[in-house]
Image 1: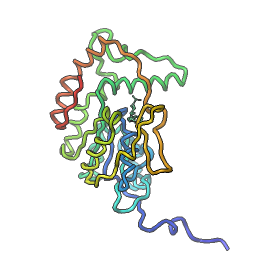
Image 2 (image 1 turned 180 degrees about the horizontal axis):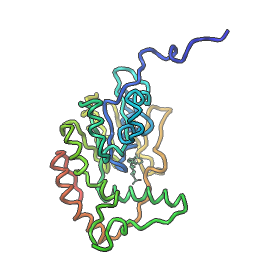
Image 3 (image 1 turned 135 degrees about the horizontal axis):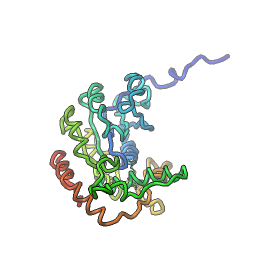
Image 4 (image 1 turned 90 degrees about the vertical axis):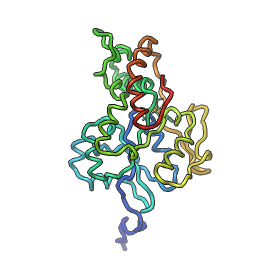
Length: 275
Ligand code: A3P
């Protein structure tokens, strides 16, 4: 006799698909994947594995909030769901849309020193071009306007690193207390203290420990240990080798980013030792 028990009945009835109570909104190449995977080590956190691109993609957004909820993993009611879509941070319409869903949502932004982030962004695009056997400009050519010799603010990798400009758009909707800034450079070298700050921000008991993170020498990065059988490192596409950038261009970019960085520190209350 064929069983007519449905999957729905087998699944404990307490499991539900919950809208995220926290979102990693960016920044692209800041370490958004590492942050999400590491937070997922916490027993009260459940991650949406894929980038959902609900709020930045008009077609997805038009599908409505129930479509978004159905993209979420099953979780127990006491757990919090987190998703990450780094395009949210830089997309004009997103703050208002997220505000309409949940005006008290917690927002995580992971940043790196802006030039490192821009070069990382460039390296990812370059790799995509090379895969298609296409040639691509050097970073220096894209980052500096050859006519004016000024920093090219039309270049997306430069624009994305002007963190304060994007954050200021978000602040039209959310108070600054609803954001937590994660130091993406420290997440690489010493992840635990950064994760503990996030646990605190999310009002979670501190449960991620040194045991859950081990430095893998071959990989050159921290990897994740869930228990004594299961551990994993991030995919090889995380942690690319960056090209060397001409030092005069680096200096020019440092001067360019300096005032924006100062403003970002002032607004967020988190100071970094970026040059
Ligand atoms: P690089 O490729 O420039 O080194 P995102 O997930 O937002 O795309 O960020 C990718 C960056 O995450 C990588 O940038 C890498 O340095 C960083 N990262 C942080 N912690 C990592 C980890 N434990 N394993 C691999 N990459 C990590």
